[in-house]
Structures are given as C-alpha cells and as structure tokens.
Image 1 (cartoon, rainbow over the protein chains, first blue to last red):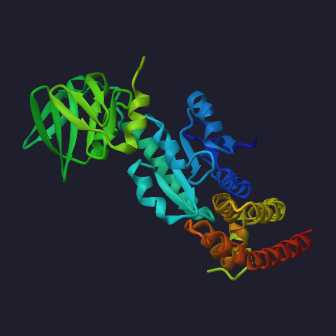
Image 2: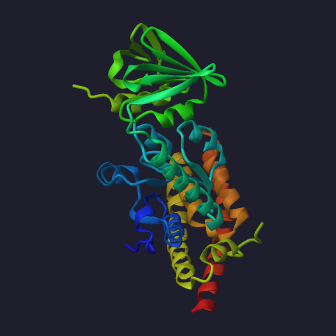
Image 3: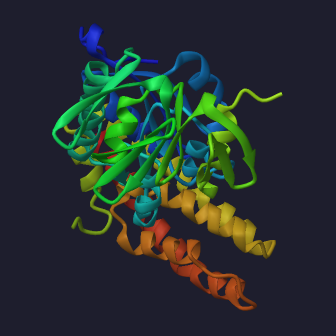
Length: 240
Length: 116
C-alpha cells in the first residue's frame, strides 16, 4: 500500500477506508494519496473486516461508506463508545441528519470530488489538533456560573443534561447551570470516563448504579438511554 | 452539471494522473457488466431486495461515468417499495438499464482506446 506522508510525520492522520465498492475505494484512496497530512493504513470492503484494525491500530479517521450489505456505516458507528473521527461517504443525502446525531465530522456525497474531500479532511485535522490542545488529561474543570468560575473535580460529575442553550451539570446534590452546548462539554470530558447516552444526557460511567432497559440509574436520578445509543452504552461497560 | 457519459468528474478528480483514469475505467468496465448481471439474476429469482442492493452497488460503480439517466434509473430500483407489482415494474426497467449501461461501456471503451 502506498502512503502519502510527504514528510509531515508528526502531524499526519492515520486513516482507513471502508467501502464495499471497488470504484469508490479506488477514488477515495486516490484522494487520500493526494493529501499530504493523511496516511492510509488500511482499505476494507466491509466494517466487520475493519473492526480488528480499528481496535488494534487505532486510526484517527474512518472514511466510511454508509450503505454496505453486511452492516450500514451508521449501525457500525453505533457499536462504538470511543470511535475515531468519521467522514461518511454516500450517494444518499437522506442520511445526513441521522449521521450528525452520531457526531460524524463530515458527510460527503458521491461522486467524491477532491476539493470537497479536502475540506472534510481538513476539518477532521483541525478537530484533531484542537482536541490535542484542549482535551485535558486534567481531572478538573472550571465552569462559569453567573459571574464566577467554580472548580469541579471531573470524578464528582454525575450527569450533564442539555437545556436549550444551557447545560445542567449535576455534582452530588448540587446542580450548576452553565451557558454551553453538549458538544462543547462532551469534548472537555475524558471519553473513557463519560458517555453520551441520549441526545440530552452525558453520564459518568463509574457512577452508573443500574441499567434497566431504557433507563440508567445514577445517584437518585433516572436518565433515559436513546435507542440509537444503547449499543454503544452497553459496549462501554465492563460487563460480566 | 456534467453531460451524460462525459467522464468530467473522473478527469476532475484525476487532475493529470492518467494512471488513475485508466484504473477507474478498468474497474468500471469490469464491474458494470457484473452489476447488470447481478440485477438480472436477482430479478430472475424474484428477489427484489437483492436487486435493490445490486442497484445501489452499481450506482457506485458508475459514479464517475456522469450518466445521470442511468443513475436515476438505479435509484428508482433501489427505492422501489415492496408490492405485488414491484418486481414486474423493475423488470420493465431493465431494457433501458441495459441500453444505458451499454452506452456507458461504449464511452469507457472509446476513452480507454483514446488514452492508450
């Protein structure tokens, strides 16, 4: 396999292509090879084949077809708790809304054109860089509540709840209302410790007491799990 | 929008990389007849779902052919709702699908000859 590194060793993104169609794979591979900051580490004809590579090689970016016979790209995303960035590539516009529910980085229509591809992967690169800068190994966060900053230990956060332009952060018996989006909060929280269980809820995994069908019990709260996210929630748990 | 069978999208993506153009033309000429045959076989077996999946796959195979009519026809098959008459309706689309596929294959053959 030819790789396109061009000496950008430290800032490359490793990516893999998953598409069941040979022409589509060749076209996307061509785009990757034209892009200096992308390194192609694998090409797969179906998601099942790609699973091992994603677990072992941990690529930074998946270039993923939506409609494949074994499993759709969207169903594939649902199986992950901590998935790399995803750019969906498809011939159908209809999937766009559903795709963005799963935080995909971008969505490209076939036939893939290089300027559009470059825009999408540049967005992925920028996100990767901003996450590197922002994602804290830190165990704390300062939140702005009215006119002061309040210090919180991440281990004390139980639930984050979306509330129009605000989010509620529940810590023990206290609730803080902060002007922010769920996405912004989600990006600040370590993925190994927190999981989005619903469009409007993020919970701390080690505080979950019980999961009963579509409801998570955490402290004295009962949080709904969206049907779409149930699989990734269950995968995130250390089950017996 | 590109003219039918103009291959403009392919050349735009390839820029000056003629090896890539040849690669895609080879893949298209290999896959299009296989895809048409798969749709025919699925219809012969009255398997609408398989015909829909094959049509979807063929859409990807022809994506750089700029063949709007063929792409629309494949979308129509792909989106066909299950009904008593659905298989018969798709079977009626096949002569047009084969004609458009043949035209695209002619374009591909001519292009391959031109670029050597």
